[in-house]
Length: 198
Image (tube, rainbow, N blue to C red; front, side):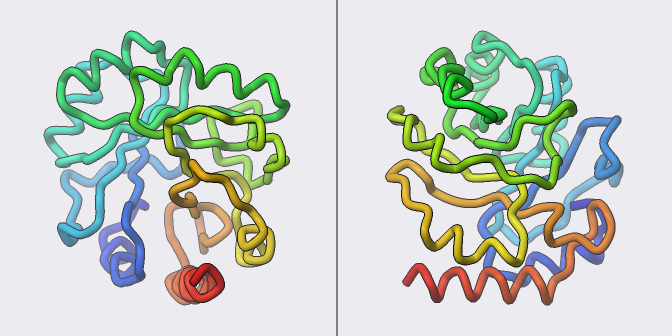
């Protein structure tokens, strides 16, 4: 999310978390001085290889609930961040089964994983990876499913079942322009998904 008016609009949808990108090279880079959100929605700050002190400063300034890490952050950095009292979501890019091995070294120092499509950059490919690869994930850390989710993903999501999957990450497939979400499209998708899952 990027602009205040769109943030307030999207906050009316039935969502639990909202993400703000603090990676200067992203077209969705968040530059506003604060975040205006109702307390029921958790704030997720997205970072790429940022120094720990910078992330903690942003966490305090924007009252972030989670740090979502999309770079090459080490388990030690994740552990130190957790020790400072913040919760960590570590993105794991997936292309083949072996990519899941990365979860083992982070298992003791993150709160959630986010499985995303491997690409040349840091997330935001708009493409879906082969979800059947996640059958190989046997870890205890819950995860979010990301990568290429769009309005036509309903049937695939209904068919996808994994005991550790606790949510989905909706982004570029629901945008008007980078960082600006289409409320009607997003809200309809969420309502249809909840109906299907119930």
